[in-house]
Image (cartoon, rainbow, N blue to C red):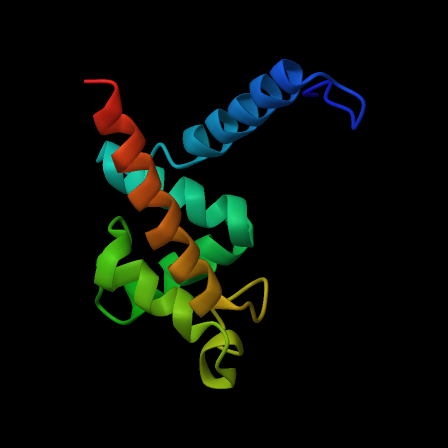
Length: 120
């Protein structure tokens, strides 16, 4: 699909990576805020879209905003390493290292913002 191989040039690998990230970003079309969609995209890249959707369903179940990452879906992502959460009926993909994903999102999103600021 992305036509990227270990022997591909750096340019081809970067282009393939960008196409992949855009594909993930487009999966989150129900998240209207661009910055939130970026966070959901980063989380999906790290943990898989199915785990992020599980965290989103848990957020909704526990009266958090399923379309906001910080202090909402992020909280439930962290909880997906706890048995009482990953065994919940709304969870389809089971346990994941959600605290790792939450930290990854914070780190990568911070870098994204700093790079974005360089090109203004």
